[in-house]
Image (cartoon, rainbow, N blue to C red):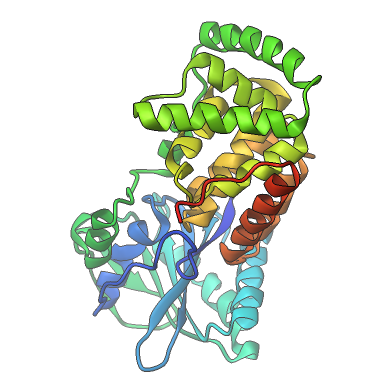
Length: 356
């Protein structure tokens, strides 16, 4: 079981990534769109697609929960209740449920229908369909539960309108959630040991410096690598890792999101997460989570937070972001942190580049 068996993925209000637009006409089309909505192909999952209806019906959020053999498992029921609270808070008025059951019979999850109705009916939130399929592959047979006679053959999720829109906007659809974790997989022990020695030297330097000087040096390193259009070198990476141990500097560096150094900084946080062991890994992994959360990529943010909290369960910024992700809060929450971060940088005597 992953640390994040449950997570909410907003499809709206992305400060750095406008919502995708595609038309979904049938139940089969909606089921085929699930991998694009999540950013990966889910297995053994309950997926709740939260909608706002009006002149047009819009997907506002997608929630996913690990599916166990028991249809009345406490974690599953708790996830449904949590989704209901989020939908009520956000005024989402319709929820479509999709169960991906793997090697279990879809019909065995009939009790989930009652759980969904018990959670959503008192809130006047419509549940027009609870659909089940063994896997999200072209040609799979999907059925509807709860006495709903609808059934059909799943079209190819790779060629769905939502998938096409997602890919055209440069957002990958990964083959599984484990593929996300591999993006943060540690480098070789030899590389990590070498990098630890470089960081030890850099740590010794930053403790005697004013935080504004440390922040300015990190910015100089990032700008140099942006100009060179190359990877951050080992010395610069070690200095950045040392800088993250100073909380005012770490907080200020959040202000780079969305600016001219956004891409090179995001790449640096990923690289540091892969090259650092132990509790120190929490800081860069949390920065990775913030970068992806701002883009509405809840799955990748969740994987990064999982890494951060495994490294240091009490790392406060990771706990804050984890709570926001688990409760379906808008990525605009992180944008507030970015705005605050720019103020922190100013207080340290450093003006972050804005591209304006």
